[in-house]
Amino acid sequence: MLIQQLFEIPTSLSKKQQRIQDKKSKKQIGETEYFFKTTGKNKFYSDGFLLGHNSKTEKGGFTVYKNGEFLFSTEIKSLTYPVLTNNEAELAGLCYAIEMAEEGDEIIVDSMIALTWLRKLKPKARPDLEYICTPYMEMLIEKKLNVYWRPREENLAGHHNENIHNT
Image 1 (cartoon, rainbow, N blue to C red):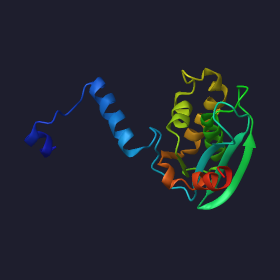
Image 2: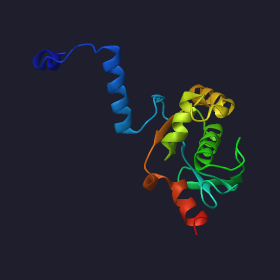
Image 3: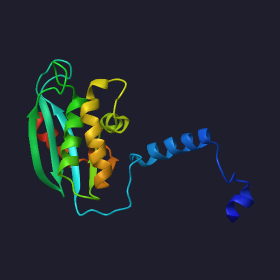
Image 4: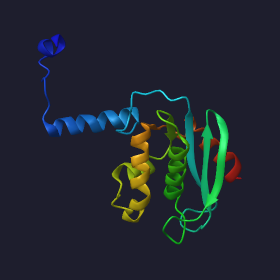
């Protein structure tokens, strides 16, 4: 390319440089590494919630919106621990959205931890979640779903949870 010649931009990066560049660009645009160039007809918003303080409650759940409208909200128990954590609730909501989505649909979440757990399949911090993460990651890839992190202000399910569950 001409710009590479003019400014002496290397035509290829080392593997380490490429990984660093990829990580920076992912953080900037806030999307997972699973982005498919397909356009589904639906956009899902998912968010987890707790009823009480993070380390002292057994109650919480998740909410999912579809195409700007309320779809589903439920309370759940911890997936593997005696008490539910917010990150587990976020992951459960993401998994529900993946299950409901059709090929090429978009899913918006405001939890990078839930996305990271799903992507890594066996997260270091929670290896007990492998049995959940693996099938849902496979489903995400099979359906060619586009999953994005967006700030809380852009998450309709998060707005619902703040209005209903944080009173």
